[in-house]
Image (cartoon, rainbow, N blue to C red; front, side):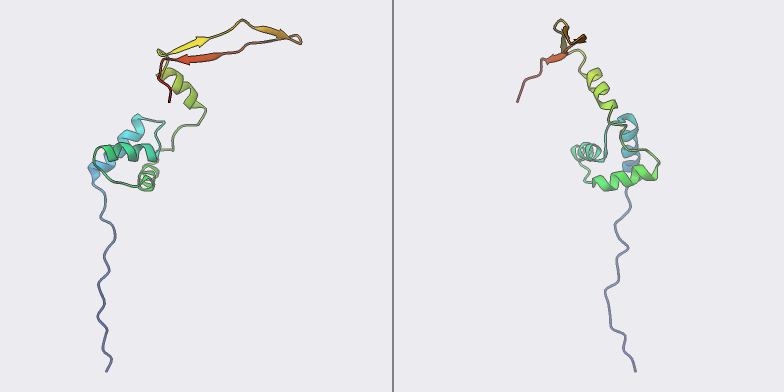
Length: 113
């Protein structure tokens, strides 16, 4: 006679996320195109939700929301966000070997580290 050994039943895994939380993740990603999974994770943590960045990326990938926009868009986004606090400084162009060189500098009113 064979006696079956008793084993602990396996748990079904992690419980699924609330639909409301998934909708919030999708909304944050679509309204803030430059935010990635880590930034969305930080915002959710401030709201009291603990979630991994990989979980957020998986949710967005499942909804066919692409990752943050191309990196060349960030400079334009930065300039648009800080346009009022940036003062453009342009010294007069200098000629060097037949080419005219122009230097461009930025000064902001933000306090330094």
